[in-house]
Length: 405
Image (cartoon, rainbow, N blue to C red):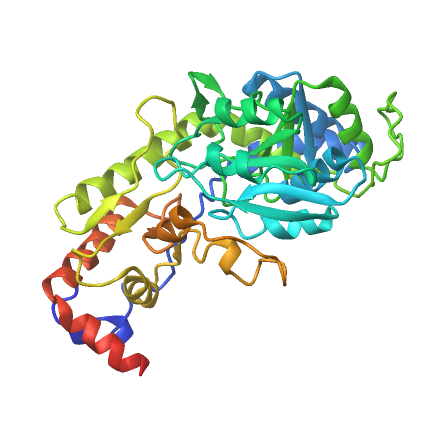
């Protein structure tokens, strides 16, 4: 471990980790099991276009989420785009969404012919603030997108109530909440639709992919049709809907085989996630100025992320600690910073009011390394870097400032 400030990698010392420690899950099944699942597709030469493993995956995910329908896709971003386009009915408008969220959201809206309407969030759950949403609904609003964060699903009922009162479709980006519950029921069926990811860095690993859950029979038919250029294919759509814009969003069999095995691993993955989160909790709890973003105590959660708040009592600010840890081989990021309405991802010329809660939250948090490539020993060493920064107090900060200037 480091014993002197000159040993820090940012000042020329060797990095703590020669191989960077990531922030993604990266869980993988046994390769022989994977090949066995994929054998059916190879034998049938049915490798894409609604293949047998994709259909099995959809049934398994629908059962997992306790919903009527699951529609698998090439990625979650396409799912968000497709829903925005469907809910718009073919007209140009606005999608209400949080500014404290994933940078892809405003891009997906524009691909769907919509503009983002950024709203503020709740300071505890980081879910869309219902008062901010209600003030933002206009005749141009085509849908409302809530984002369930990893730590707490948020006030889904409140958001749904506002949407129903204004007759506006509402859906959820639940990518970081897979396997979590809301009011003791697993997420998947609380709004018109929910979108999930099968990216390798997420809880369910399909290499790349995504899916939509819904209890709406008509919407499910439209999505199946839409993901295949509106070509009927093997599952003809009985609903005529002129304003659907088709796209190639089909999931292939190789990705589906990976994902179907991930579902069987999810309880073990969550258990290991908790062990890592608890290691961070124990390692950081005595350091003044640091606090791990807590998970809901009322719901089942997946513990897939560890996010630390850095306040004024700690000698380094968030961005200085980011610089220090990245130099040591921590592949980390500031958490949802900058906020979308103040970032390069905001459409040029879009006028956005101040969002005080969002802007305050975006200054605070650092996302720490997690997942299968991060051991508890790694976490102990990362926590020691925070202790080291505290020990050297303002000297590290002063040298970082001189380095920048």
